[in-house]
Image (tube, rainbow, N blue to C red):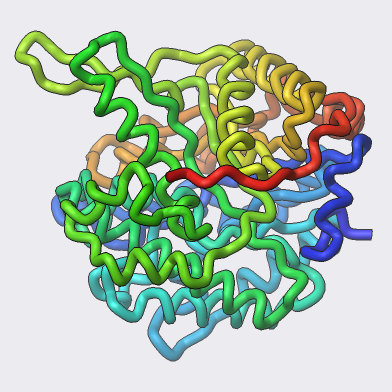
Amino acid sequence: MSALPSASDLGRLAAPDAFLWAVGIEDTFITAPHPRTGRTLDEYELTGHYDRWREDLALIAQLGTPCARYGVPWHRVQPAPNVWAWGFVDAALERMLALKIDPIVDLVHYGLPPWIERAFLNPDYPYYVAEYAARLAERFRGRVRWYTPLNEPRITAWYCGRLGWWPPYERSWRGFVALMIAICQGIVETVRALQQVDAEIVPFHVDATDMFDTDDPTLVAEARRRQEIVFLALDLISGRVDRNHALWDWLISEGADEDVLENFLDQPLDLPIIGVNLYPIFTSKRLLRDAAGRLRIRMPHASGDLVEKIGRMYFDRYGAPLMVSETADKGSAARRLDWLRQSVAAVRRLRVDGVPMLGYTWWPMFALVTWAYRQGRRPLHDHLLQMGLWDLDPDPNGQLARLETPLVGAYRDLVRGGSQSVGPLAASGAPRSPMRAG
């Protein structure tokens, strides 16, 4: 039987002895060349995964994880509007299935095929992404059942709409709001298309889970607004953004159309399981002012308590089952191993208290290339961020060797322990009626 249940059988993950251990390979795909450096950011290409995918999937099999998050490079699958090239994706997903690794398919990870002009702001984007998702689901109907429609919608909207790092290069809060709405429209159309292909498909909604606070009384309101923005994508797609929502007036002031917002209310999506991406180096955000009075954000390193706070916060808000869909620390193997132990212990405490944390994903399984590579000029090896179970290290031929760290054995032991590694889920952990966010 598949480790990943279908939509009608999802409840079996709430059994006390059920738990999903997973890994994932960083799959950021920003295919537009940077205007100054000409560089792109395709993590599969930069880390050599396109050439070494068989070896990398064999490493997952060595861990024994029953499932893995795996990104599909849409820009390679559909290099032109009416051209489809499934060779790499077919081979990789078939190999995962043969190895008894259930794929959690990551459909969009920040970037789009370059022929989609204006990227997410192209008026036809929701239909393009829905068609792509449906075609993939048809190829693996009945065998691949879990799909992430779009990884981290808020971060996507931030880098594409507020910071202007990625297409379509907007640099304002109005840009952020426009991007967020377009992205969420795409998620809604994607889920509908997937479930038309196979009603048993499980949409696995994944977003970054920042926690904002401040010691400055003048920034309390801003910290609260930033915290509400963290939930905005999930609130939109699940029909929670009505006129009573904390962000309604702000969204309208930043250019959102009332009719468009109300469309999300008409056919809200269910949230069968929510993936929370959290990192001790990124997730805690503290607002402060510098000497000139300008707003600044610091990111203090967090302890394992962060996992508990996030788990309770999301379960209280949505009443849905949860899974840690990304977590890792950077630096030495000892530091990473300490975070593994802290975060798994926090998952155990959540389950004892009845919060349905149903799985855990170490991400990335080997080092990633930092996003600054695309706009920088330093060599690739200067941009390696060691966060994985394996390190990446250049060999004499310039290839990135996968070097096993002590985390591999530690993670393998957790996986072998199954649910016993995190303890049973208390009886009160069944999903409950979600609270409205307004």
